[in-house]
Length: 448
Image: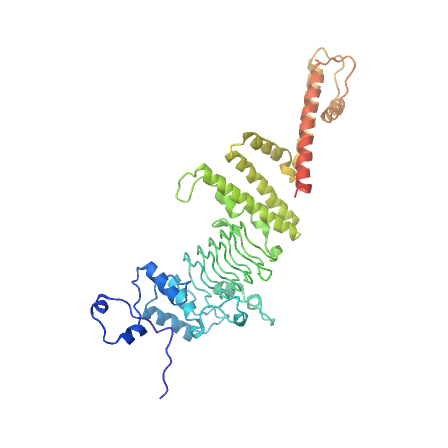
C-alpha cells in the first residue's frame, strides 16, 4: 500500500490549551512533531514562531482548518475562465491571514516567488483576480508575480489577454486593493492591469516589472516606490474626485516610460492636496510645523517629477509641475516666517507666473501702458497749466517712452509738472517690471 503524502494545506501544529499544558506526555517525540502554537492574540509570539519557521513575512495567526479547506477547495475545483469571468477567489473577501496561508502553500508548498532567483522567473504568483482585500495591511508581503488582472504581455509570446478582453472582462478580473497598505511589499512582475488601488499605500514598494496598465492609482501613496523600465504604466488612473491624486515623492522611476500616463488629468499630486488641507482627517487644525513639513514634501514631489518628465522629453508636463512647485514654495516661505521673500514671490507670480505665464506678462504690460496714457490725458485736459493738451496717441507714445525710461518732455515743463511726475513714476514701474520679467524668464529657461 502506498503511503499518502502529507497535504501542506492541512498539516498544522497543535494549539496550546490548559489541558495540554497540565497533562505531561509520555511520548516526547510526539511533542517534537506537534509544536505548540501561540495563542491567537499573542502577536509577538506569532512573529517569533514564523521567524523560526523561515517565514518572517508572516505576522498573523494561522487560519483555522475550515478556512484552509475552503480556500484549498476553491483553488482545486475552480478553473479560471476569462470569457465567463470565473476565478478562484472572485468576489471573496480575503484577509491578510488568508493571503499569508495562500503564499505559504503556493504551488504545493513551494511558497512565494523570489524575484531575484532566475530559476523562479517563470513561476506564476498567487491568483487574486476579482478578490476583495480592501483596507488590509499587506506590508512586506512577497507578492512577486501576483495575478491581480489580465496579462497584457507575455515574454516570448504574442499573447495579450488584456487587449483581447472586453471592458467587462477586464473589470471582472481586477483585484480590489482600495485603501490597502502595501508599504515595502514586493510586487515585482505583478499583473495589476485595471486593478483597483485607489487610496492604497505603496510607500517603498518594489514594482519592478509590474504591469499596471489602466490600473486605478487615485489617491495612492507611492512615496519611495521602485520602478524599472519593464514596468507598464499605460493609461493608469492617477486622480479622481473621490480619492484625490497619487503621491509620488521620492519615487525611483528607473527607466519607466512616463509618456503612457495622461498627466493632464492629474491637476495636483497627493502631497500637495494634503498640504493645502488646514485640518487633519480627524478634524483637528494642523500645527504650523506639520503644515511646513507637508509643503516642503509637496515641493520636492513636484520638482522631482518635473525633472523626470523633462528628461523624457515631456516638456509641457514638466513645466506644469515645476510651476506648481514654485507656487508651493511661496507658502513654504510664509510658514518659514520670511515675509519679504514671500511678498517678492507673490510679485513674481503676479507679474509673470514665475516665467511660466508669458501671456500674463503681456497683459500687465498693456495694462500699465494704457493706465498711464489715460492719466496723461486726464491731467493735460483738466489742469489749466497745460497749454496744449495731449491727444490720445501722443499720450500713448509718452507712456511707452516713459515705461522704458526714455520719456521726453516739452521745454516749458518743469520737474514738478504733474506730467513729469507721472512719467517718472511710470519709469520706476517699468524698471521693476522689466527686472522681474528678466529674472523669472532667466530662471525658467536657464536656471534648471
